[in-house]
Length: 576
Image (cartoon, rainbow, N blue to C red; front, side):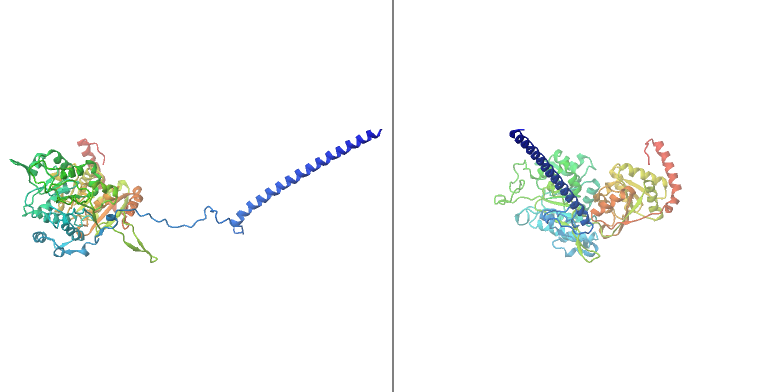
């Protein structure tokens, strides 16, 4: 071969060798890269495997302090958020809870008129309860310049009272109102008491009549127990010069009051000085009737009589300014009373209260725990019960409830028992059953009965002629039935306020009393939770063994069959 051919062959061999070396280098780099990735993955896996080891107690590198480890927290008690209340609710005037230990002689309460002191003594009242000793002077002080103007010429503060049933709230407003109006010259409606039921209105009217007897003050009750025309004749009289009022103090139910405001000619509230709302929580719930707005509108409307003096006419009050103080104006003062007065500012706002003062026996108490620490109980939405009340609940089933009631009446010899059911039908059926069983003087009390029969029933119960009075919640609010030894909730109440008012029919005025509640097994947990949330944890569990009810079964079944025949004859078809 020529020299040139040899050179070309050598160049081809060099190029081929260079290509092989480059290929080997590329393979080597790929292998090293793959190995490096493999080692990195193994390193990550070993790190992940070390973390569980650290959880099992082996040493591990702690995470940075800025990171939060999930689940790594201390159990701490949740602090209760205290509601923000207006000052008058947050800082009330506290009343003593123990009635008998804090009686105050009538003569020690300042400012009471000698005539009323004499009447109190004639009615056997020698001492005031704590609520009376605090509220009576407060109302008298607000009218120290007479009923035509407030103290110092300023508008008096409204007063709210929250105290247990049977603590003397009625006398707390009767005494000061009668005293303030003793010197009145012209008969005008100066005081208006509004109550939720006819029976309660009749009871309050009776108390007013006792303390106005011989004073010239006239008390009129408008509750619908008399015809509308008859009530009109009792309220106003038409003369040649116009209408004149025949009442100084009116006791009314909301519906009947609204009817007279709109339909009775000459019915005038422009001189109204006191508006008393008893059972205030119930009245707030019934605010949909719009009775309060009608009362306020009637109280502040200008008189149509052009000859009347402009001096003591009034307009609806606004902010206190120099101009508003230029002439005297008859103030309208509101007095609220209830055993379960709400602390909900939104509900109370509906009443339009002016700088109110709260008198209450519901407040926080310190309790000492076993470890010696003191805790303060929250008083919000808590209620107080009469001091002498003993409470029990009886777990039962639906079929044993009638037998338990018979056991209490016949075996345990309970007398003057007030038994509550949740409906008129349940009350009537239970009455018929106990009547058919026999051996117990029983009566029923509900709104299905006419007012005259209800009054007669209460009177006979108070006289001891009736052992067992079966009632709906018609008697639960405010009505003072004398001599109730025991209250039995045949149907467990669904709401705490219903429970408070029911059991409050006994242990009144510092006396002792019993309260039993029949609670179905399915209701037990909710019932106890309701009482605990209301600050009533000390209710006792009362178990009645089945063998104690066995002797009553045969006669009970005979009563059921007898009652079934009666139901078929009457054709009611109601099942007991």
